[in-house]
Length: 255
Ligand code: ADP
Ligand code: MG
Image (tube, rainbow, N blue to C red; front, side, top):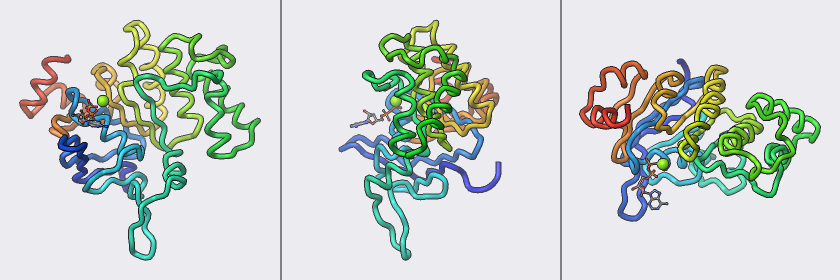
């Protein structure tokens, strides 16, 4: 891994009132890397992802995506807060997949995939539709293009959500517990799609409780607790010989 990391957090803090959700997070994700973020509930994993995707503002510290400070632009040596339009433009390069799919219920599967590329990127429709169909094939749902989300299983909906994120040709994919809302028998089909993406070299930051996925697909696993990174390393190391007692205590419960 060389060059500037695609995501770099340095001493990032975020408070919600008196709750310190992030207390100085340091994290780097390099291009082509798959980083799994693990840790107990309330440790700040979602907040960190939401900051990366401009859904929350950091209070202090430095957060950059692709070398650009999140939420700000620099002009004539000064920093200016981004306007909503500029935030949308930057967010368009980041795909995010949530626990609860968040598909547009009134649109068909194909319409879900083409909406943002048409509206945000203003790409030609034929090209967008072709790419959407190819993506549906890739997640094993070529025959569901005209279905509505409610007609699909949770696993199928989540695969559509992944395809929809990919339709924007993102440089970074964020996943926030993408399989946590699924029946156990549907988890595998979603993890398979994510594993395929990882193999193809997509840069991914994945919050997950699926330690098998982390072990197989992650280049690095980052353990967070109480709003900070406690320890990180290659999965073999972190799972095999965790150094910090907090990490050991957490892993003894989930492995
Ligand atoms: P995780 O994803 O690791 O479970 P979160 O990032 O969701 O953790 O939450 C970290 C802390 O911040 C928790 O104490 C949570 O209650 C708090 N928190 C997160 N979002 C908000 C919010 N919008 N308003 C108030 N508190 C929040
Ligand atoms: Mg969370």
